[in-house]
Length: 88
Image 1 (tube, one colour):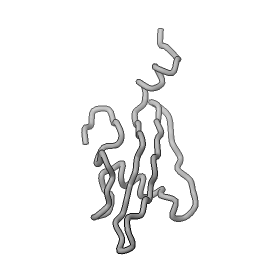
Image 2 (cartoon, rainbow, N blue to C red; image 1 turned 120 degrees about the vertical axis):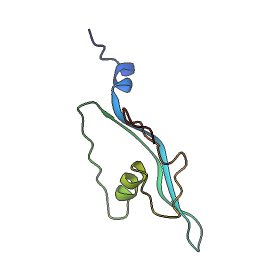
Image 3 (cartoon, rainbow, N blue to C red; image 1 turned 90 degrees about the vertical axis):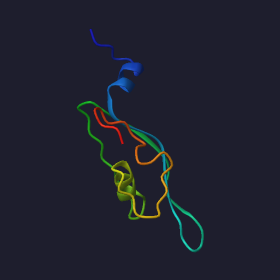
Image 4 (cartoon, rainbow, N blue to C red; image 1 turned 60 degrees about the horizontal axis):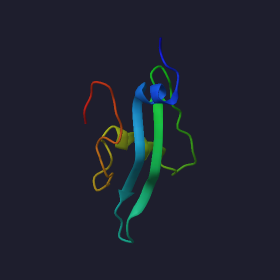
């Protein structure tokens, strides 16, 4: 019998991101494009990322894939997430 408690939900996540931060260096100092983003996607689930222009949607997706722009810093990169069967 499968458990449906919080521990079960956490272990069933196919994507887990904890405290994602992405910073870009500029001439005026570092710009934090993503600040402390955390989420999970359960097996069979879906995630929609919505927000205003410039809110970090694309930067988040690129960081998850290890494709953040040259010069971008994402501590823990390139794998702030967990994908079954894949290690980044």
